[in-house]
Image (cartoon, rainbow, N blue to C red; front, side, top):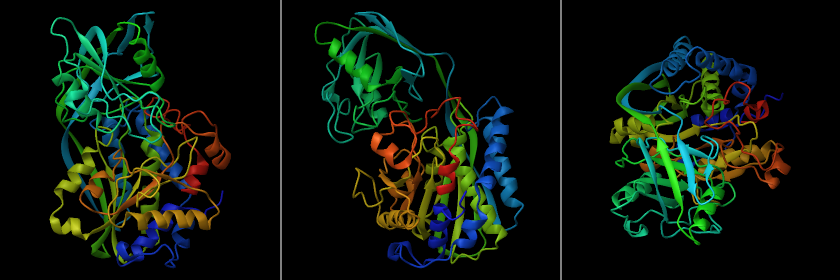
Length: 473
């Protein structure tokens, strides 16, 4: 494999050398060859194999709050401390840990009884409460079928007025479409309107059709069972309501443990301008359901290998670099938020940029670059993020590699940086969304299946990777 394509290493070398991201240009000449040559897929895979071994020894998971996560953090910490190049800090924090205790149930009782398959046709939302509800299905207002041309066109469940008053005499289940507000808002509004459970179905545009896996967040105040399902199932249920009533059963058994200890790991260069610090981040935790080798062993292993090679080269960055391995990302970006909340105003100002790498080895990959200037997507953005995007896109172009924009949509560990005005950027090779025929023609792989068919599943193991994606990112 070629070792000249490591765009992460190139981008890092560039921002290490610049005085300020806000005035940077992707055209600034930067010699990143030594670092790019030093970083290899073999080196990254050594860390991935270590993460797999840790999961194997700890119930097939590396989720925050579990021994598998603690062992992953200890492994990364030992690797970085051994270099002597970094100041390594473990940043402890507590969080509310969610887990599912029993297989959930979703049934259509009438008409035409049907049992839906758990974790394939529906998924319990993280932080859903426990409940067993058999009741009449009621659709919210603002459901858009067929879906709008753009993402987030449905306002379903985002306002109190979207819900018909619930019956005081019989259980009722709200049918809600994904759209312009957080799942938490939809669930809380459903409960406030008197509903006993909620089904949130995907929105329906290309890439938003599959079974919906969502998080309500640890701060969710609803106490009802909430599940996610696909657009096809939601559309069918919605259409069945036209001729007459629909009765469904939703049953979940969950546990939320308060103040579970976990941690971020921070490794900071001892040299470089502290007023232009570059934070290179990837979340270290997996979901409970699997070892998380693509999500996000791929990002963690990649930045770990880059950090080790920087140390081996004894690089002298103009700007201080901090490698951050975030905890509790899968529980709602909790580790990142804790980190940003702990910064003083001066430290926020001194953070020049965040580079985020959450999934860079997806088996059915596309080379996505975060749309920092929001020119191509409905993207969150902060001043300077467009410059970071330009660095990645221009480098891919220089290597004859196509790339695609992807939105900052708040789903990964850049969100809190953007919220306080820190520029951000990064790469992503795709998760549960479906690869299009056009993308398959450009990037190879298989159209009509997810970028990562094992996303948030037990099969996200060492076999669930693309060496090509790891090589090119």
